[in-house]
Length: 238
Image (cartoon, rainbow, N blue to C red; front, side, top):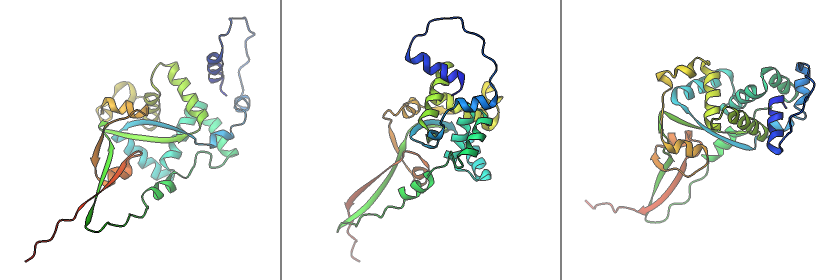
């Protein structure tokens, strides 16, 4: 684990006394990798991470994924790991564990939409309604499963600069895609109008839902589908 993250974790468990310590020599790259210990847990994507992106950033991310042949989940995990541990360490880990950031998200998504519809009761008509959380204008919700260690380390770094985890992750993604110059100037293309429910959604709190199209439902990480059976309207006899 990187020295800053290691120190942050230690300080959370116990108060430490100030003592004079000898100055540490600069660590070599090999030392940094060794300090990660057993990093096989980074292949376990067991912690949900939710945040939102402005629509143009989401579009750029999807375009980059298509060009690179990566899924969005895989690319986001790589971005976040590189932010925490550095490009060098991530490449060493990927060489040791090929497919480190991949999973079966896409297969699970296909299964989600391939369920067989129930039989229609006699004299009833099926009415499908699709719902998504109401989060605001120009807001695209993102939910990605990441390793628990990575999520915990991101929380440490977000706490160090005193901002919420979802905002910290959003700024990581924007800066990786569009450069750090896009963050302080806040260009108009990145402006969004999130509702208070956007942060509630990121924090797993209940938010209002709105009806939507099947396409938006399928694109949303947490859309809901309801089915109602209503009486069939009798046909008029000629």
